[in-house]
Image (cartoon, rainbow, N blue to C red; front, side, top):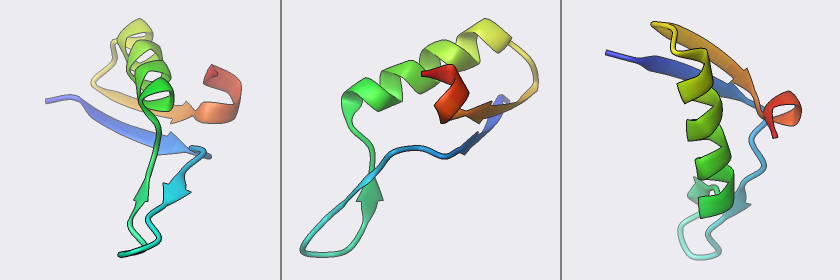
Length: 50
């Protein structure tokens, strides 16, 4: 199982339920960064990965 810790992710907040989420573009960048690392545990800092 791959576990990823992601820091400093730009996110939006739902006005109805206050749930935080990221855009598809941000999610794609996170996935691509994780694929490049291909480690069992990865720590991705979005500021440096994007």
